Length: 83
Image 1: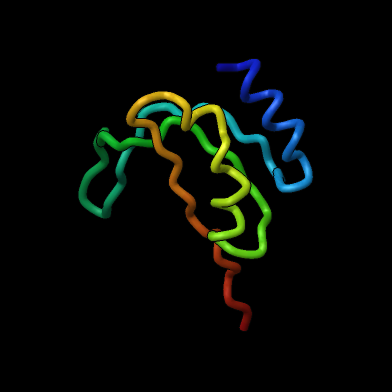
Image 2: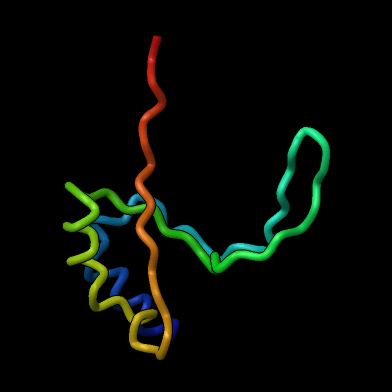
């Protein structure tokens, strides 16, 4: 899968802001507790696109999606409000 990902990355380099990488185990912190939690996150990449729909069209042929039951979630990074 690495070779396929690298070829896909090179083809879509103009949309990739940060190649990202694998993610480790999650840890949730509250005001009263800190403990490990489970989630479906495996890695991240930061893209720039006109919309989530436009990005979805870009990643529809991502090699990660060629395996059974795999998925990619798109999460928008919203700018911080200014005073």
